[in-house]
Length: 379
Image (cartoon, rainbow, N blue to C red; front, side, top):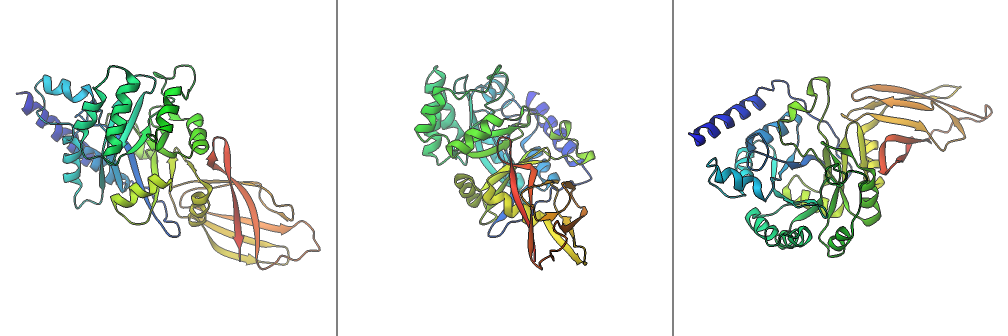
């Protein structure tokens, strides 16, 4: 009877996701030399402590036009309890297998992962691009000591070639007063068992401390929804919202290329209208988002019409230019055009055919509280 109930519930979950009749694709352009792949690196299902069937995670990704998702069910007690209750009879790789098989020919890459879940310190880590979550579970269970169990699991994950991420360091249940980098995290980092850090978690928002640690220590920044329920219950799709996501600048549309980009830090985080990342990738991304539609010249100056062809707003503030007068603050909304009028501050100076004007992009950040410097070039 319990197995019949699980089957019925899975059909309900899948039907609810399929009922989204209006697709809501997030539009982010490619940058020179790379394809921009959009994805969620932290998702749960009924196979640990989530409430949705793995196929629902794929359908949610299709709704937003994501290129990849990682199934990261907890590798410890969640499934064990469900097996003990007679709900499931499978191993810890099953949720990935169901999602992977369903995603075939649907344009979504499903990455095999698991969340190693220990107390603080060191807390929770995601291991993605693995091949056996049962081995991760056994390694984690090898010691009651949180640090020793985590280290054993991370070593096993590294043996499988995993990409290793410290999850939600600012989670209030494990960091109730302040976000702390503990000595145990230094040990894990120095042992080469930390590739990235989650700077944005949908449950807890943005962590400036984690972002700065990533910049300081050369870690890849990561975002995850950490969704346990249906995303439609938390993301206001009707009014244009998107889930937090990773923007991976890959050499090809493949799992191998996603892995390579994350290992090399070729990515950014897009969450709640803000983008976080390295200037090496954010500058060309803004170049591709904001396209000059027309340039109109007159004796008084130049009018530049720009278009935002993405789903990302761009908030510009004048910066660095003393030779020209132009708008001090402007937001170019997704799908909209804006005009920037530029005049020489010295009225006796003629505008050159080619010139540049400087801005700070106030919703693009290269470090905690540090906006991106950007130059708009007119030719």
